[in-house]
Amino acid sequence: MAKTNLWGLKKSPWVFHLAAASCNNCDIEILDILTPKWDAERFGIVLVGSPRHADALLVTGVINRKTLPRVLSVYEQTPKPCLVIGVGTCSCDPHMFEESYNLAGPYDKHLPVDVYIPGCPPKPEAIIMGIVKALGRL
Amino acid sequence: MNWLRLLFEFLVFPGFLFTLAAGLILTWIDRKITARIQWRVGPPWFQPIADLVKLFSKETLVPEGAPRSVFLLSPLLGVASMTVISVMLFRMNFHPHETFVGDLIVLVYLLALPPLALILGGASSKNPLAAVGASREMTLYFAYEVPFLIALVGIIAKSGGALRIGDFILAQQAGRPFLYSLSGVIFGMVMLLTIQAKLGLVPFDIAEAEQEIMSGPYIEYSGPVLAMFKITRAMMLFVLPLFLLTMLWGGIASWWAVPKFLAVIILIVLIKNTNPRVRIDQALKFFWTGVTVLSGAGLVLAMFRL
Image (cartoon, rainbow over all chains, first blue to last red; front, side):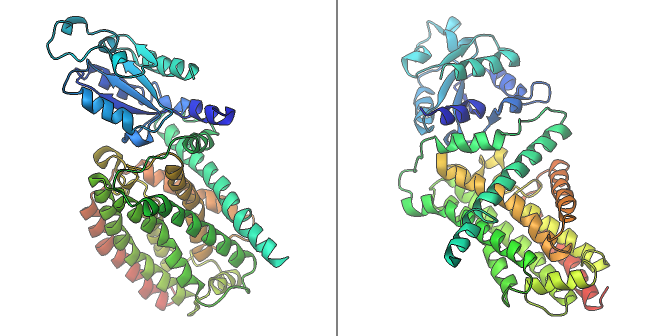
């Protein structure tokens, strides 16, 4: 990718919030990074309402058989290049749902995940740091 | 080499490039003031440029079954109209004798093109939320256009029946700016509200309501085509206050125009940050009763030279 384009992508990552059957804690923490205390707009991070505008998908929750087609469909609708960031402990491993009949498997079986952010829920600082690290991988 | 000068005027100054640069700076000012009002730090100065660079490097997706040409070309309509308006306004202000009769009517039609681009783009993108957004944009356009046109008629009455914008400017330079009178203040308020609605800013961002219909007509747009809409919006943020200054506040041909212009911008941003979004029926009622009556009262006052 050309140098200016990469600069643009790094300085203005618009994130789309993709809740794949999460317990809502990570979702609330994601909204926290937009509040005046953390102010993610300093880094150009903006929460957008449509996956077509997004550069990074913040995926939360354990993906199950019901949500997997939706997650994949949203990933396909996102214009590339796009990052996939797993937020919360659920994205790292299925922990207590390991034996569940409904589990669709770990994230990286279905999606090219760039960064995992552990924590139940992760702190807003951790989420911002995760996005910054994901951008560093580009 | 007349056509070369014309090309320069349309593409560089005061046409596309200049308006775009000014609009991007104004977009940053808007976001920074918004951030400061909310006790945030706000984005760095290059943020709008970075947004555009990024959008141009991304993929363009066309929804399945959408008419390709309309979907991809409608964003250009707004950019083209804003370029022409900017060139016309600068020419009128710096050479007020050289304009043609009826340029006000041309400007009114050109100002209708960005909402039309949005409606066409939203309606052609085959998304129910975009269709809702397009229909809201259409309703909003009819809502604010009534008091806006009455205010323009009032300005024509104040200038003694001229239909050339050059004559408005000459009349204001000979006497005093139209704004410094009772009817002028009323027209200023009406035009400010109209600009707010034309720009799609809170309280009239009903068409793109981020939280309820996911940015409405823009929902299916991605990459460079979305960037065209962002460019249109940035250029409008520069051109519409310029239009207000030209019509009411004595034109832009002196350095006094700069603080006046910034005052209008700051007023727009303050209105944006201190009001909640209204519903579409509330907006229609607001424009067709309150603002239209206000505008009509201004017209009557203008007839009596107040």
